[in-house]
Amino acid sequence: MIKLWHFIAIGMLLGAHSVAEAQATRRGGSTPAVTPEQAAARQAEQEAAQKRQAAALAEQAAADQKFAALRTTKDGKLKISSLSLKHKKLFMDVYDEQYFRLDTAVPPDLRPYIKYSGLIQAYTDLCPQSLSKDKVTVEIEASQYMGSDYAPFTRTDYYKKYIAVRLAMEPRFVQSYRDSQRKFLSEYLKTWRLTSPDGELLSGYLILSGIGIELAKDSRAMITENGCGNPAIIKYMDNLTTYVSGAWVADQTDRLVWSEENPLNIQPLARYNKEYDMPKSVNAAIESRQFKILRCAYFINQNVQATEYYWKAGGPTPPADVVAYYDMVRPAVAECPAKVPPELKR
Image (cartoon, rainbow, N blue to C red; front, top):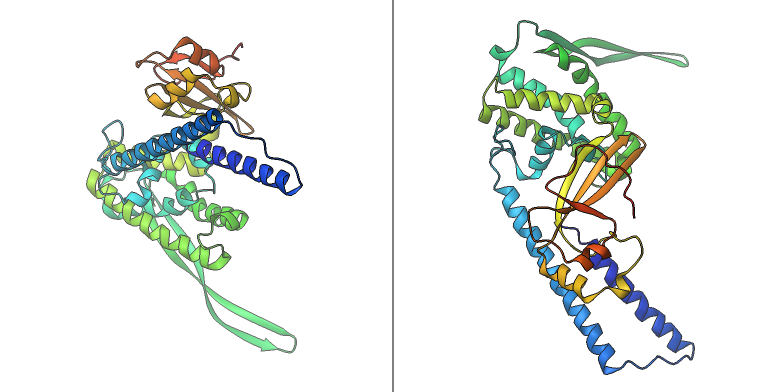
């Protein structure tokens, strides 16, 4: 995805500079005269920033259109044309084992927990003949309020237990099926100020419950599109189980968890703040948008993560002074290494 934060940051810096000048003037100070050359250079930089922003927005729009048109996952095995655009990225991240990205989403993404029971129920409803001979039946009890008795200073409530859900499933799904709704409620109560769509506790919960219905419909559509017993569907259910159960943490220790490719831009890829003395060659390299950077995120453990940057191999080679300027970017590779690289010697 294209990162636009640097354009905003530049605007904020320019705005702060203008405010400082105005304050100095109000205090009786004199504003330094701007030479025609300085004014022309400032105007040129503003125009260049606007062009970069427009190009980034255009690339983002093109990427969004390309994503919306996807019909299968990257490996071509899971058909996804039946999924709603609203939730397609979530389904793809689960299939592609992007657990770290799901876990570190801001605000927290509770949809994996919301959708788990709907996915398992959908597969049982649509594909009972595909369940193995080892399948087990899970029963979920609920209570119904029947009434109350009153006495001086006391009240006794009466409830009747009943079986709310009776469902057959593979044994490896049972515990996560029982736990998923409890985990959703627990996480929601801890994070509702961030995760409630409308900022309210109760109504936010109801809205998320409605999203659960949307996700259940997408799950049913995906199973129907791919067919019962399809290995890609089984993989998807296993991956979602790995995530909601928390087993992914042990599986992903000390390894690459996600990566992305972006055109070279003004990111913090140099050890020191060099934007004020940026060589013309660096500006030209940014504006050309022909040089690519790989951003590689590594999960060390639950408390430590690392991000490394590489030049993207297979395209034009950046000029030597551009490579020297971006001294936090490692030598070119075709894709992010699977393991955390050794410390970069600078």
